[in-house]
Length: 360
Image (cartoon, rainbow, N blue to C red):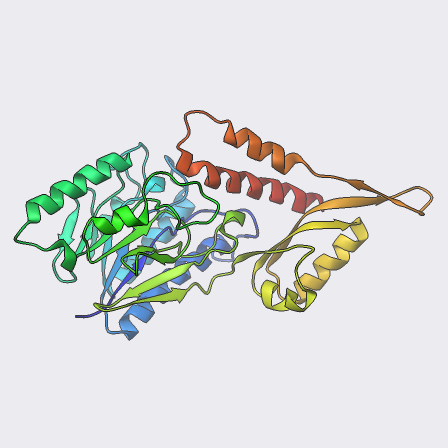
């Protein structure tokens, strides 16, 4: 059987941090992400495959659509549909409401392109060529559990779930460091009985339960919350899964504990955040220039600034506590899905970083 490819959490967006507008009018970071989609198809074809599965969150901003984001994204999918078959499910970021509907998801129009199918039905769609079941985003995990039980009960004994790969968009406990458990464990997911379960939503490639449960990871890094995560795409064979790391710039961090000998390998080609240091404005400027020379695509400082006294004989440290205050505020927010708290914190940190980088 031919391999197929899976991408997830593309989060097409007109990013502002470390992004500019190219001569073609395209947001430069959006272009990098769309180029990763092209690369996934190129590597899929090189491996002999011809089907691309998209596991949700094609777009980043919920409930609104920027034409300068939608149009180039639509154009790339139209281009890729001439090369391979594409099957997609909406993720939570693609939806206006809490549940998946044809009318209320942002990728439905992409499904009108020949060769592309968007799966929005509650019970999903089983694609027999690859034995892949796709289920769109469910508003709650209990609804997802009920749908899966109904499907596998209806299949038995005609179709064996153990021969079918499941692609869904839901966060699974333990797949993303720093995110509190939300009540859906990899052990439970493995107990559903599928050959393998591939999940979007959490931006980190990771395998659990002897490879039966796999977090796909995002197509590329998007914000500081992605530091340390594995982005990319998957080539799925009957007997194995090959992870292909993203070639897009990563978000990385240097602290006072980072070995200076590792600076170059860490920052080259990436977006860099400096934390946990005490630096004067002059040292910040010098450090920024050095990192840029090493190939950093952008540099942000979140440090304790030392201000030289009027006599020039001492410095006074000015501690930054705003980050902690914001995190505490987010933790106290009501009517917010706990699964999203870490992403909200990461988004707030990105905004603070942008302000600080301008001030620096």
